[in-house]
Length: 327
Ligand code: ADP
Ligand code: MG
Image 1 (cartoon, rainbow, N blue to C red):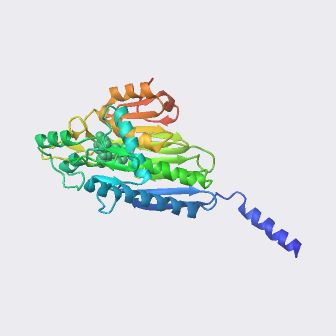
Image 2: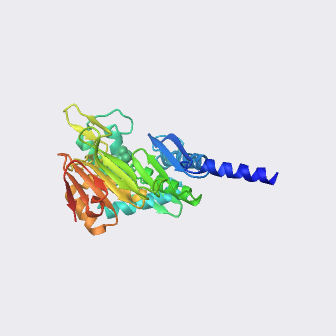
Image 3: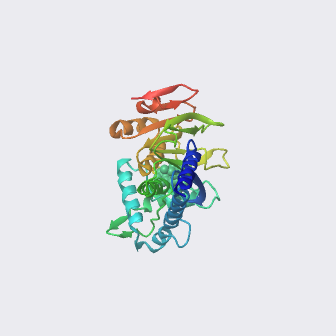
């Protein structure tokens, strides 16, 4: 009997040899975008499902439009004791607002509404109305778990929620021992480790001014977040394109000469906040910001198709076009 058991064990082991590790891919629609979570290794189905449940939970907290979300309640009630996650997110966004000299600003919801970005009913608003909306907003006040907004202030987490959520998901998966996973949260990519075969992941960076990819990144264990003017925009009656990233100084869609900004770093929340902020700032200010802060890499694509990348990235980047190295 023991011999037979041994034989069965050996056969099972042999059958396991050379097989690709288990993998599970689950898709979910959350935060107004399609997301996919791919986990490799033991219990991957269970862990991918847990990650999807977590993204649904966070999406429900941070949706500006779902009527029973925490953010919706905060925007309408103006004073609310919020979850620790939401308080943390607001505190982080406020810190990034200061660091980016106002380029990242989560108080633009009334301005986004006026342009129709909250409903899809786009229009070019009256510029005086936009000036009024800009002047009425105030920074949120956080005290313990309680957040207070002034009467006319409404928040929108569109520029930071996916990155923040990505960090939570990575933490959840790492705590369970996952060493290889790819999270695609609507274009925000977060990577745990390398591919299961030990090689780096290859990520295509979309060409914002045309078809296909403009570059391919070989990379592991980091977050890669792109903001651009090519995915959510409308063409106004004047024939001009208006994208969903607003310059808080003007209240109008940012036109800084960049078509996309990809930020690569350890944390999704920083990459997400910076991809939006650097897009608003434009190439010159983005390069200055990187020189001063430098704990991330970036790839900038200009509206005229030029590529510029920070020095640490260049060797991991393949592109048909010439890449200017930012140093
Ligand atoms: P995406 O969500 O498409 O990945 P971003 O991370 O750049 O792109 O976020 C853009 C979203 O953030 C907009 O749809 C809007 O909800 C909000 N937003 C627009 N401009 C700003 C800004 N200057 N600061 C903070 N949030 C912004
Ligand atoms: Mg962002």
